Length: 136
Length: 125
Image 1 (cartoon, rainbow over the protein chains, first blue to last red):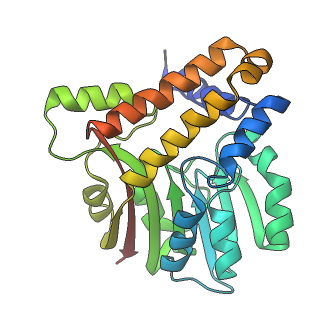
Image 2: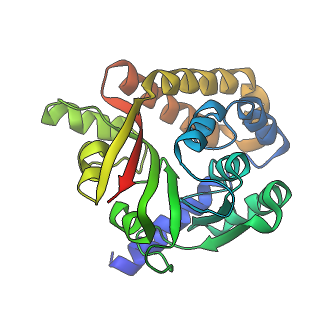
């Protein structure tokens, strides 16, 4: 398998993750655990801690890499007042998170489809970067 | 990816990263077992602390979240159990079985000291 084919396979596997548990029963299962962990493995307490150590405030720009549906960047931006750029590869994840992100942050959020290894962003642009359970 | 984080950060900007990683001090066989039991995209490049430091950051805070992770895994397995019949009807046996196996494997790895979850804050210099 060449590099491009490998990349496509990887992207499809990421997309697939966001298509699991989309039935009514699946939503019920996800919402049951979602009380403490809205997405991924980062709990609300951990996201609040991330907000407290990010050292950002109003008008600062926060980048969330591998953001999926927008967690935990959305909470960090909400708690600190920062503007958020939420980046991930799977379009399905961005699509699923768009409504909640807009409701939570309004015009302070921008979603970008992109790979955290090659960001379509200039140098020295952000005051903080967060990432949760993204391959380092 | 961490070098890319450094590139887009202003000087003195903060990197706040949380990740599942292979526990330190393991032999080759244990590391292989951790990789097998861990998440598909488990990083194998070395301790997060070292990777962050090598990418242009001063590590200012490190926090071990492994116990929280163990509890989260147990919660998810319990939630699967409680919704098992309905999930199997709606999602199919394969999806439920795969989900359970992944979570159970990660729990085993955590309990055996093969995986940890780490939070780390770096300051861009």
